[in-house]
Amino acid sequence: MTALSPLSPGLSPESPAGAPGAAGTKRAAGAVRRFAGALHRRPRLRLAALLTAPLLWLVLAYLGSLAALFLSAFWTTDSFTSEVVRIWTSRNFEELVTSPVYRTVALRTVGVALGVTALCAVLAFPLAFYTARVAHPRRRPLLVVALLTPLWAGYLVKVYAWRLILSEGGPLDWALRPFGLSGPGYGLTATVLVLTYLWLPYMVLPIHTALVQLPENLLHASADLGARNARTFLSVVLPMVWPAVAAGSVFTFSLSLGDYITVQIVGGKTQLLGNLVYSNVTLNLPLAAALGTVPVAVIVVYLLAVRRSGALRSL
Image 1 (spheres, rainbow, N blue to C red):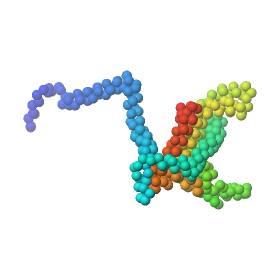
Image 2 (image 1 turned 90 degrees about the horizontal axis):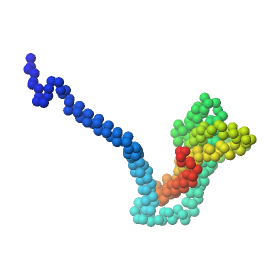
Image 3 (image 1 turned 180 degrees about the vertical axis):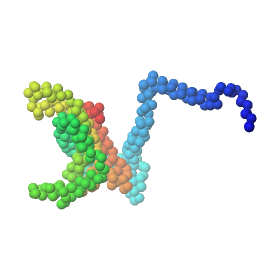
């Protein structure tokens, strides 16, 4: 039998071999408790710790890219090689203002975004009212899921499906032919129609939520005072739901303003700002950057316009 080795100095038979490790664990646990206590006593410090990482990502990834976009819009390109020349000039913005082509495309893009937003609001109101107020309570969740189901499909799948529907001799032409009508084909009308289909759920959901939260006694009080349905809608329902409509319009307007794939697939020869940006990225990057600042500026103006309605608090 091998003889037992003597105990090391400073250790007794009762002391555990891992005492230094246990002491380190206790010190770490104490530091964690002190740090948690400091965060509990200082709510602002706790909020700063929670928001530092996402705000840093927002500043670097989003605001930083916007700043780079704006700065590159003041550069120019070599007319022979199309290489970017870092010489400061305002020629790109001057071209945007003075060229009638760019002005027409910009106005057309804003008009398409406003038209899609208006159509989404008109279609979303009856759908949301039915799901929130008319349908049986047990069926309302299923109806909301059904309205949001198109969001589960891929963007390109939906757009190409509409390209097939709108094609000459396609399903829409076949359905309208007995009435002596035909589909709109590819063009500006098709672009507005497809964009309305794509972004309609973003308008239905906030309106549905606002109608669910609408107090029932307000509708009863309006009816007791002799108001008809139209007067109740204009004087009671619409003012209460308007912030939700404006909140939904932020999504539909901004998404329509920056879209360029739909117009390429079903727009025919129609040009929007997104198409011009896409086509100039490889040929004239500073001009594409200048064109890209136009939707950003329009969105900022639109957000400032809807801010007064309380829509930003409803997002």
